[in-house]
Length: 142
Image (cartoon, rainbow, N blue to C red; front, side, top):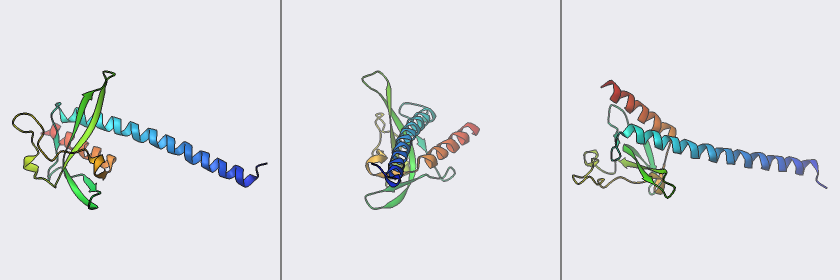
């Protein structure tokens, strides 16, 4: 027979578990919509957003040396999957490389320096999309 303390612990466990599922779902949706938003703002399939001194720079924390780096550019690659739907993958360009080298190569391929940030560290999604939003507003005003 369960006692009140066990019932309470079971309730706490179930509440924490339910909340973690809700958080995972919300985070997955936020990433999906943020990637789609960045893809639309970058303007072209091989386009990208280049931050500068005026726009400011979102930050990326590199796990290899626990250093914070400026994100000079962001882009999203869209590829069709087997269900004929698009998958979106985020890439960033940090101050490990020269911002002048961020442009695509003459043959249209991406220059060296673009990488998937989830393989090497982390950043704040909310911060990144705010910088993209500010960049978009500045571009529309120019």
